[in-house]
Image 1 (cartoon, one colour):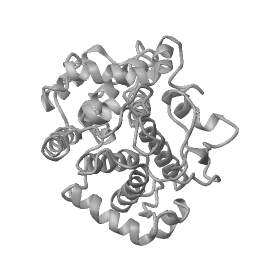
Image 2: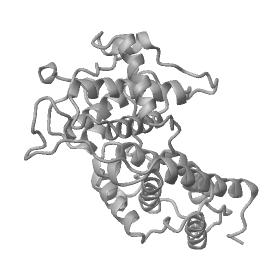
Image 3: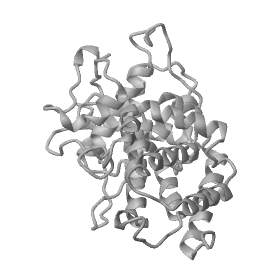
Length: 342
């Protein structure tokens, strides 16, 4: 009975196969373009691992300030990484990289930006607003010219699959079950899938910071690994019938044989994701982690604060999971030191 799919689940399976076809044809992982050195820094003018992470933080900050959907961060970074990796000017100068980052963000919002409110109003990041964010360092003409270059370098393939898109369809394939006295009300299908969705979204967001994932894993693998991680967290507090879980995994394998917990690439991706947020996976032994104030969902930065300029860069040695998880827990918003600006 678990394997019988309703029309919505059948559509989800076809949608996943469509995402995979598009991904395999146009969106395989890009080649790395970062400069590596003894401490990750070999030149004060070239792009390093640290710089890519700082740009990622800035994009999150801008997205949150304007209340855009956070999936746009993944799309913007996809545009940025893929366009730079195809550039003939690698390694790339930091100023040029900052221009490409601002352009990629603008292009992502322009093509895929939408409101998270029920009104459904399509939101835009205007060029004047972007120029202001860049503190006038880049003009509208420079950004428009860069937009053409980025789109052209991508061969106008501007609709990349994202891990969150996969997660949405993965959850639709989860078999439904009726609540029993044995499982309890909190083990309903709705409670379980909402908790998994919440946790998986968080994991896809912090995955944006991982260089290994950006240049070695595709969106589908990242999504499946995040799903496994989320389920491992949620199952400690919210039950799913064993037969239902087995059928869910079976359905995902029917989509593609790579969607398997013991697939080597999936296991490697899952391990990398766990390393990004070790605290979350340590807490899986603690009760009520998912549903109380310790919920792993990342808070947005305060909307009253203005985002930093792309020309500003961060300093400090905080780990990705610590800085990102606690963005809204500090007294001040993310601040960047201008002393490192090129």
